[in-house]
Image 1 (cartoon, rainbow, N blue to C red):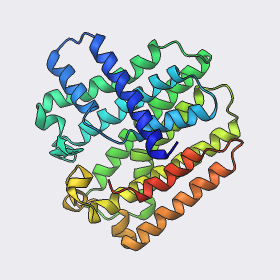
Image 2: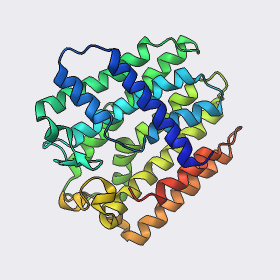
Image 3: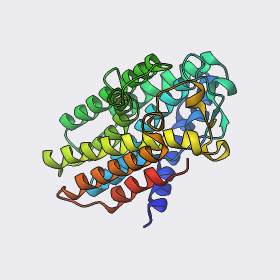
Amino acid sequence: MTLEKQIARARSRVERYIKAYFDVTHFSDPTLQEAMLYSLTIGGKRLRPFLVYATGELYGANENDLDVLAVAIECIHTYSLIHDDLPAMDDDDLRRGRATCHIEFDEATAILAGDALQTLAFELISNHQFSVPNSQVIKMLQTLTKATGFLGMAGGQAMDIAATGKSISLEQLETIHSLKTGALLVAAIELGALCSNDVSNEDLQLLRKYGKKIGLAFQVQDDILDIVGDTSVLGKPQGSDLELAKSTYPAHLGIAGAKAFAEQLVKQSIDALNSMSKQSESLTQLAHFIVERDH
């Protein structure tokens, strides 16, 4: 199966689960429900769910368990995008080619939709009967909370805001994006692995290394696309990082240097995969896709 088909399959499973959940769950406020569902279903590559499935299936995990984790991490990712787009953050009007949540609804509803999606992720995990011991479920919750909070995504976003309009080192930039972007990608990989009883500590460490490298490569490519990409393809305003005076990899390394750095990261990620006890062509293909994509 090609990588495109595997990603499409992951997308289909996640979107089917989301639809089923919202069809049967009664929310306190219909507008809030509409805003949550709007943001969850306006598109996206669903790379984080794909990573949950690809890693879990490599180690023989239960697919129903993987469904829950794939949806949970997509809820976290979507909440972060809703809040990133707010006027107090990046102030974006366009996301995935459509109006951002606060434009489609209003700022208060967008904030609440993000809050509700964040807590929904943990509700889904805590209410599911997993096929692995409860000790591993606790590790799943620990992994996701760390990746989401001040030691992960939220912390990286705060550092990114603090660095806007300032000159920062390449090392500082890597730290920001390892937290802001990379932490959730690593978490997706770890969650898939934690759905299995067949993952060694050595493989888990190598999977984390792979995740960190592709997470950084993903951000480098995003920075490149912000300069050379097309708004109609990107689904968000091209040049927004420059407009906000954000520090980027092309600003530090130039376009050619940034591309070379991204390729180096991909090579390092694949080296980590090749050292594992099990080989995954899907994860290898994804590493290449991350730096070849145009949106």
